[in-house]
Length: 88
Image 1 (spheres, rainbow, N blue to C red):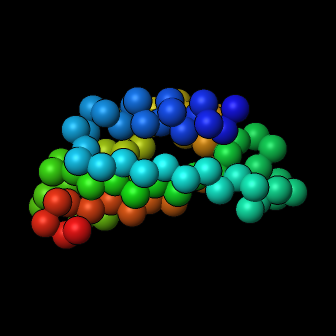
Image 2 (image 1 turned 90 degrees about the vertical axis):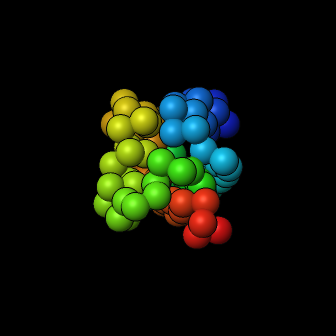
């Protein structure tokens, strides 16, 4: 299920027209954690022009909006590194 969730997240993030998206499933590192049984833990590195001029909170909102219902079920935790192209 975790590879499927990562691919669904990648598909949802396409709306941001990112230059790069890397999603790492870190669920295995959280085995036994109470929330881990309900959803996975993922690490996201994303570079997109959509982040230019936006602060961290605004960038995360764009990502959460794109992820939609995945954040209320399949994804329990999402670690985000969101950069504009000139910050890489």
